[in-house]
Length: 444
Image (cartoon, rainbow, N blue to C red; front, side, top):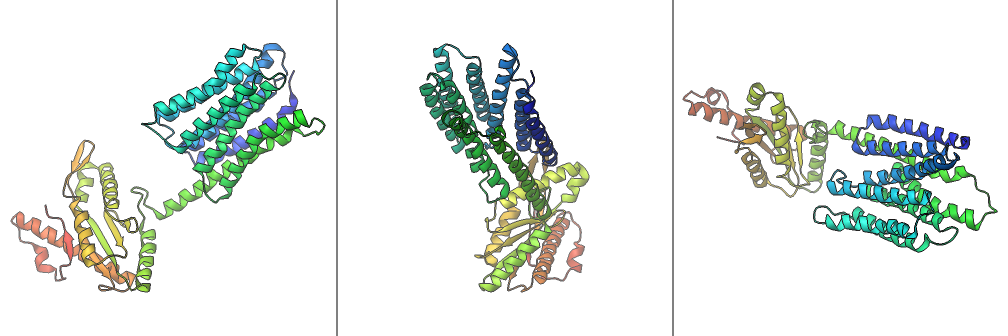
């Protein structure tokens, strides 16, 4: 006998899952894939409700699928919010929770079962998470891990106390399991998406309401039987969570697009547009407080030869390595940007001075004295650095950039001259260039 009353819910969740899949397709991250899998479990939950009135074993199987799919979805939503979810200990915790919840729910569906078996299943709620948590504490630890251990320890105690009560004990135990799962979702999302956005607020509030459905619904059913509440009311939090998750994906996509618009796609550093904005702001602050700011323009030597001889793939690896090295050697208040093919720029803000800028420049080019190990390739490059200091060298951004560029070219000419002299050739640049030497260079 088919329970046609579940069809509208199945259709609504199917449409939401389709919309979620469409949004997730444009934001193909590991989290969005796990969320989509969770919503497919919710769709399975409603699909099984169509057959929950089937006779004998088929009805029991449908009931088991209904409850297990609902539990699996919540556990997947929780796991998606765990940092380093691919870590073996996180996978072990997920598998342990899936197994213990499925075992306990199955026993409740096929009840009556021996009391000792129910006690063992309830005890596993505490034993399995605690065993995994304490045995892997040295490898991985997080507040979310401790939260899961605490929640399931309390669930174990509650189920052991109430599951043998006549009449309503098993129903209350089942609702306690589902309440724990979705309260865990609420806590996980609150810690993972603690931000003032509509998507975060709606999702967290939706999970909280979803959890309390398993508290409020039994109260109405057992204590207030005269008050009729439509079954659709208890499904509303599911739809709220679905909408919230879609908003979260859209917010993340907007933030990602904004990041791409202002950052270099290869190195992740600020691009020229963001670099100019930050330089403008740095100079404004320096004017306001009568302070100094320094601009370093860094051009990689021998980079073209790397591309020509080893290919652009190796050249990209060089740029990524150099970007990481430069970023690790400046303060968080300073800016390292990629402003050209093989050109980087560094903005040093107060407190700084010419001496400090010279020190930073020397430390950056010193990083490139050692060959770079890039897989099976070893690359030797150098760098030429030009430095300009506000306000001594220039008071306007354009003039400061020109001064730094000219000094970088001076440094590059000096480097070329020394190489030519070492090779026994007359340095033509020495006869042609008349600009003052004010840069730095790497000399091998």
